[in-house]
Each structure stands twice: as structure tokens, then as C-alpha cells.
Picture (tube, rainbow, N blue to C red):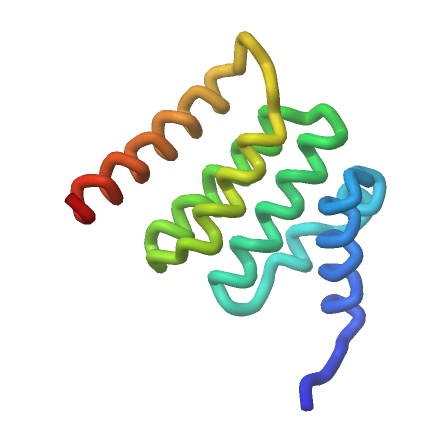
Length: 120
């Protein structure tokens, strides 16, 4: 049996808000206080927070957070985190992305190339 604390309820609200595209649900929470616990779970929550920032039009903040989560995913070799980070990137369509997004793209491309070289 697991305890369901107010922080877990808030984290679930952030996740739901991110998936529903409701930035007010995501950004209304004290997100730093929510990002506790196991590193992989924390990275997934940070990606949800990034998705909320992106839905709210805060592109640079979103990709700064997503980059941090991607690094954790790579450190722990978590395909789930890397795929969720790719999902955040796919949700932004622009012909002229800011530098933070281009840097994120380069990091994702490097991950893709490393994976291709290992399987070849």
C-alpha cells in the first residue's frame, strides 16, 4: 500500500494538466516542491512541467527543463524519459526555433546517432 500525499495529488494534477494542454494547472503548482523522489520519476514530472510551459507559450523555459530531464534520462539509460523528451520536442512546430531548442535538437540527434551506432 502506498500513501497518497498532497504532493502526489499535486503531481498528478500537473501531469494531467500537461497532457490536456492546460498550462494553468501546471504552472499554478509549486513545481520545485513537487520534483522530489526517485530521479526517473522526477525527470518524467519535469517533462510534464516542460509541456505545461510549452502550452503556455514559454518555449525557452520549457526546453531548459526538458534538457535537464533528458540528461537524467541519459544518465539512467531510460528510454521512457528520452521518448517523452522527444514527445515534448514534437509538440513544438516552428520554422525558426530559439537557440535552446536547437541545442535540445542537437542533443537528441546525438542520442539517436549513439543508438544507431550501438545497434549497427
